[in-house]
Amino acid sequence: MNRRNRLRRAADIARVRSRGAKTVTPWLVLFATPSEAEVSRVAVPVSKRFGSAVRRNRLRRRVRETLRCQISDLPGALDVVALPRARAVDAAPEELATAVRRGLRQSRARLTE
Image 1: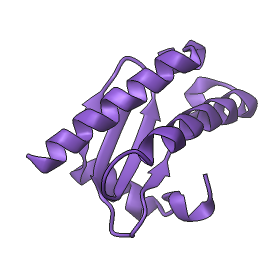
Image 2 (image 1 turned 60 degrees about the vertical axis):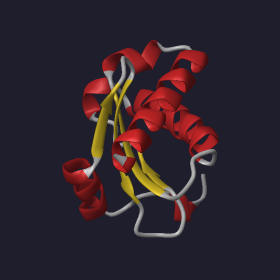
Image 3 (image 1 turned 90 degrees about the vertical axis):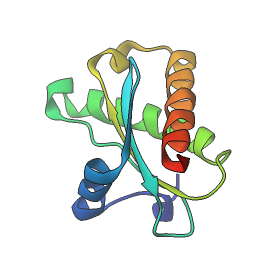
Image 4 (image 1 turned 180 degrees about the horizontal axis):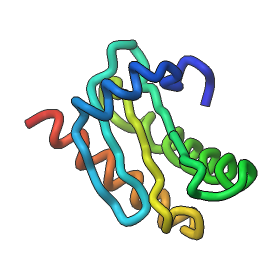
């Protein structure tokens, strides 16, 4: 995922978390709002409770890659914050992809209501 597709500012992440449509899956909590940019942007904050930096970065990369593959299929641009849950560390790639797909679909449906 290239730089323009990432939410980097703390203010943007806070905006999405406070105003976004929340979707809870067994592996992730997703927040989504319509994007102010012309492209979809993603943030994957992972707290230190997940363990060492190696473990946190591995989880962040897995979730970000799964989102990258799924978010391009959605119509329109979204800002998405994906908060991994503790179970996501041991999740199989297929399970993570299914959770992201379901979460994005539910978020999109909530935003269009």
